[in-house]
Structures are given as structure tokens and as C-alpha cells.
Length: 202
Image (tube, rainbow, N blue to C red; front, side, top):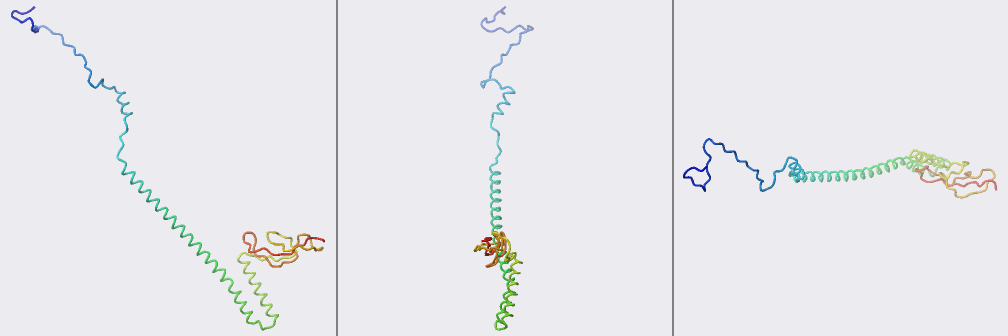
């Protein structure tokens, strides 16, 4: 009921003491859309690209360190190769010197034999034979044993057949004569013995 003198077009205040029901506020949607739920937030974080630290400087330092190590390793390998080559050359020179020094006594004995060339021929021949035995012993000490045996079976590892002759007294393949002796055997062979071999009964 309107109060006397009140304007009927203006909203009327409730009377004092009367309870006005609270107004219900309807939820308003935000302009950006509904707020994301907890699962949506985790999914968006998983889909987002990871935050990468600044690792360019660290990577460059690691690359530089590896390149330095590689250069050092290559330099060490080259130095090792050169050192091994020098050691091989030195070892060969030492071995040649050792063998040459081992022959000096034989050379000395040959010179003594020449000094006595006018002496008795038997003495000279005996001296030469001694020198020959000395040289053969020296070759044996160097690992090149002499092969000049006759009456033994022909061995292609030790002998080289120069000729084959018929001999009724010797089995086929027997060494009858040694034209020049062989020295060494296997991978340490200076030369095979050149021999005449029996073909068996004629």
C-alpha cells in the first residue's frame, strides 16, 4: 500500500522492521571462458615446452675440451710412431754392428793366414781349415746351422736338387753329394743345400 504523498512511479522502500529477502546473485562467466580445473592445468603444463636452461656456453666448453683431448691424443700417437721408428732403426743398426763385430776374429785369422802364404802348403791349408770351422761355428751361433750331410734322405725344406743320378747302392732320394752347403732352416734359412740326389737302381 502506497504511503500518502508518495510518488507511485518511484520504487518504494520496505517499511522498517520488514525483512527483505536477500537477492540471489547469478554467477557471471568471465570473458576468458570458464576457469580451468586441476586436471586441465596439469595437462596444459605437460603440453607446454619445458623451460631449458642456458646450456650453450656449457656445451661449447665441453666441445672445446673434447677437441683439445683429441689433439693431444693425436700428438701422442704421432710421437709414439716416430719413437718406435727410431727404436727399430737403432735396433737394426745395433744388430748389424754386433754381427760385424762377431766376424772380426775370422777376418783377423784370414790376415794371419795371408802373412804365412809362403810357408809350407800343409800349414797354410790347415790354417784355412781352422778359419773355415770358426766361420761355420759363428754362423751356427747366429742361428744358421750348416747342412752338408750326405747319405741322408732328400728334404725339400733343406735341400735343392741340382741333379739326379742313378746309383745302385743308394735308395732313391738319397743325398749323394753336396755341391755347396746350406745354412739355416725354416724361416731362418740363408739358403738350401745344393745336392745331387740318387734316383735308385738303374
